[in-house]
Image (tube, rainbow, N blue to C red; front, side, top):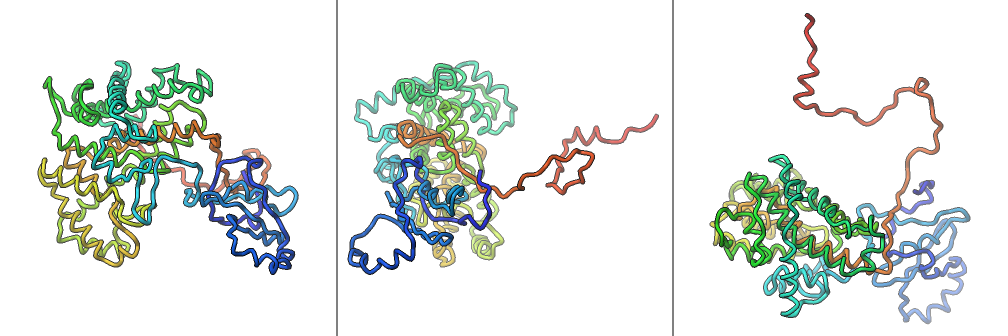
Amino acid sequence: MLARDASLRLSVIASHLRTATLEDVPTLEAQDVAGAAATSSSSSSSSSTTKETITVVDNRTGKSYDIPIKNGTVSALAFRKITAGPGDFGITLYDPAFQNTACVTSRISFIDGDKGILRYRGYPIEQLAEKSNFLEVAFLLLNGSLPSARQAQAWQNAVMTHTYVHQNLLDLMATFRYDAHPMGMIISTVAALGTFYPEANPALQGEGLYIKNERVRNKQILRIIGKLPTIASCAWRHRIGRPFNQPTNDLGYTENFLSMLDRLAEKTYKPNPVLVKALDILFILHAEHEMNCSTAAMRHLASSNVDPYTAVAGAAGALYGPLHGGANEAVLRMLEEIKTVDNVKTFLEGVKGKKKKLMGFGHRIYHNYDPRAKIIRRVAYEVFDALGQEPLIEVATELERQALADEYFVSRKLYPNVDFYSGLIYKAMGFPTDMFPVLFMIPRATGWLAHWLEHLGDPESKIYRPRQVYLGPDVRDYVPIEARTEPVVRSQEIYSSSVSRRSALPQKKK
């Protein structure tokens, strides 16, 4: 906690954060600015030699500091050594929402937002979506390389033999209300799943459990990836009032998932192969996306050495939010509001007039066409050919065409993102909007687990503990309640249920 006069704080220092201790930080070269100016002529001869440092001048003291640059970043802890004098804590970097902060060194996925590039372990997403399958991509993310034929078969067998869940867990899911949101059910169930495996809980077995025992680590990965489709299908079946289906392990990963969703009395039910392939591609596209909100939550939780079930449940909680996993639902609502192609121009004028919001365009990372959106657009038409045209697709296509032809949107780099077409595909496949984040979570759990593994092997990893800028009251003395005046506080109003309103009615006197 920082309690420091505002004049001694820097608003924002554009830099990246690297985990370290003060002892690990390279020594800063501090010098008096006036003295540095006196020697500037002698140093100019060596100016052709590029130094991998930045120089920060502290105008409070007149000192300058050379801070090393590594991989395009500087150490946040290096700024701790910039002080105004004895007793000063040092400079802390302020970066709300982590807009320019790197907290890990990762080798899992690479994004170049300006060029519209996404790669998993070096492989372009376009190649993986076209030529690979989800389980192969999951192996890649978790292990760093694509599997051989033998490894691929062994991996699929291992995952598909971990699809069954304990009957007690199914009984737990059956106790949810009939209208419970599927994500709420899945988050709760995944957290509960960890209680079935006490041998895999560091709180019971010791904090070094996953650091020391790779076999225990691998077992939980198989359990989570294998059981998530089963849990998700049960959440779906519970919502529609049908009995839970057991997995069919001789089917593929996404094929088995669709089978569990839809199978009735058929003994040899097989889903439509076009839909299986479409969902498999969507799973690939959603499997990993660098340090997004839910992945950062996964890393944050993992830093405490909690078990992976709890960490995945927490990451899913972040994904549940409408600003993250619910974006494609917002796209559908927007298209339904536009209704017809004839209304697109008027809607876009409303967007430019700040009266409407354009959903599914633009991205915090991508400042070009989201590479995943190009792939999904093609998949969408394949699904529509199999199931029939989705009425909103014409609205979406015309909206995209007009927006990309309008300088207002192009100059702001507002291009379609992955959410623009994915919601249409899910809707065409018969999924209600509250299942959309579930279909996002199943594949993204693989990316979360890849980051969990990377965190466990990272020598720089420590428990996450961001700092804050404290602007609250200074020390105050306790005042007895009878001597206090009534303070002005935030609203204390709540909404009332119908039962509360009924019971609050005044009673008639007899």
